[in-house]
Length: 204
Ligand SMILES: [Zn+2]
Image (cartoon, rainbow, N blue to C red):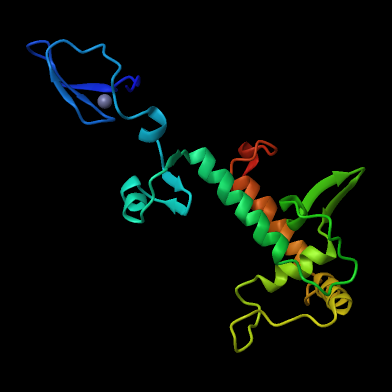
């Protein structure tokens, strides 16, 4: 015997009302019933996916059609934690095997992304060389081989030196890619409504 509450909504107000359960679809004419015999639990109603012993399915029907009998409703939160665990796993698997100075014990997402922070009177952008070398090969513009896989970096240390050189190489005006990065970030902050400047002073 189920003990779930129905989730009624009323479509017609007269004669006590016509009520429908959003969960099980049952209709009831008259006063809104207080019975708690809905066959559908809130978890089942709110499920964004269904998990069975053989896999994950978008609907209960898909699962049943695949022969699943023992099913658990999966909430959006649960689905997110499954997905993020999977992403974590892929990041760890994709770590390049032949990069000098790699740290095998780390696998946290935060290690993959460059971070920017103020240290003392300096703005410091940091990324491990390992992550940098991996990240650049993930760019859609990085060349691929015949199998469609990113071409390998044979000398990571040299490429890092070359990247540093490019970062510091100025154009005719002496502007380098880091200057442009900071200019763009500052203008983006203003576009996003920065409260750090006084817009009244802006010349119309
Ligand atoms: Zn119901």
